[in-house]
Amino acid sequence: MSDNLIIFDTTLRDGEQSPGASMTLDEKVRIAKALERMHVDVIEAGFPIASRGDFEAVKAVAETIKDSTVCGLARALDKDIERAGEALKFANSGRIHTFIATSPIHMKKKLRMEPDQVVEQAVMAVKKARQYTDNVEFSPEDAGRSELDFLCRVLEAVIDAGAGTVNIPDTVGYNVPDQFGNLIRRLRERVPNSDKAVFSVHCHNDLGLATANSLSAVLNGAGQVECTINGLGERAGNASLEEVVMTVKTRKDIFPCSVDQIDTTQIMNCSRLVSSITGFAVQPNKAIVGANAFAHESGIHQDGVLKSRETYEIMRAEDVGLTANRMVLGKHSGRNAFRTRLQELGVEFKSEAELNDSFARFKDLADKKHEIYDDDLQALVTEASLDAENERLRLVSMKVCSETGEKPEATVTLEMDDKEHVSVENGGGPVDAAFKAINKVVNSGTDLLLYSVNNITSGTDSQGEVTVRVEKGGRIVNGQGADTDIVIASAKAYINALNKILAPEERAHPQTGDV
Image 1 (tube, rainbow, N blue to C red):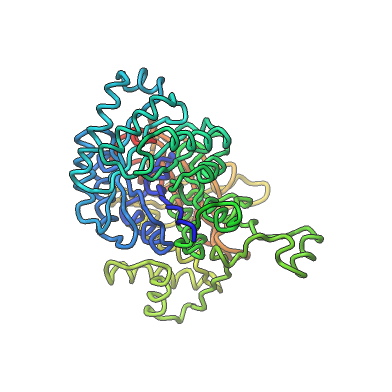
Image 2 (image 1 turned 90 degrees about the horizontal axis):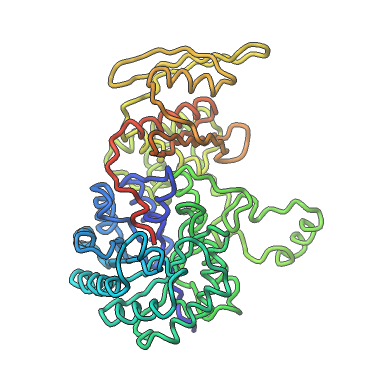
């Protein structure tokens, strides 16, 4: 029996560093519960020193999750490590992940420290973290561009200091598979005490090689892979959890380890949940979780699959949780059936008032849509949580007129700071007119960077899920909205984004927490 490959998920930390992908405390807990149901080994819940909100989120996840290890990130600084230790105080199983840069360019240009100082700081950080937990991970940031001899020196020192996991990050996605796998092999051979620590990897996808680099590292002795759901992460993202897991599961003939601990049937639910919460849609041809991942259009392929699935499918769709999963409920269904199905999806209501609000939304949707799917429910719960936070601006009503040969016109009634405003504007289309009418009231001064529409399920009565990305003064946020009417969904998404922009921002720049 081969050893299990440790799956370390950093969706809640590195994934959140995608511009506009910030998550609320409740959303982080929802995702953490979904990861726990998947039996992910380690959940990196955030960067506690970054803000009060990040601290509270890590603390909430640590107090909620019982079966997975909960990890907090900390720079190699006393204040960071103390904050992480405090956030993880009540974790059933906690880990502190501390890091410092080791590449020449980072040490010289960013840290302005000499190599000896970096080694001393790294050892200090590990020893400090050991005061809070025996489970300490150390990362030499930008290891992919660090000098091998110095990397060996640092790793030997931190392992001696008590780091049980040493993570090798390709921070800027610079490496290629043969090179990166060779680096892991050489480090394990040259570091004298390498047998006393698990070697981990954390690969970025700047060249589209994050998963390939991670798997090459596994073939060369890495025992842990750091990854994210849907490959979410800053810049081009991180290694995709679903790709790493399903590759090792599918190619048991190649890999010297297994992922038997992972419940892969939870992958699709996790993917859809993260997509719904962050507003980052999954591209249709995305491996494993894309809409086309198990679709066959070619006649030859269809014929082959009908005769024998294995002719063109190397995995079963059911293995990743891809099913119709239809909820046979309608407008006459009761609260108990509604609550029960959401509990099965991992959604717990904190109060009767929260249940009643979501149930009322469900009834409204059932009046518009004949069949309700699990994806509809995920979007509904996400929308309810979005409306509950920072609701300085609220859509009261909207009327849009669009006619051939005439310029579309939108009349929007908004409630802002408990006062109603009516605004009328024309635009190039109904959505443009609605956005202009909203912005006439708010005068936000934002730039619209992205407008994206995706259908949540199939059919002409499907809910449309709209994502908008706006920027103001260098601050970027995403907004989401869902409705069977695309124009209304668009207005909801735009208002959600504006509410975030209008809310105070206290979080430190997330890139200070990158490895």
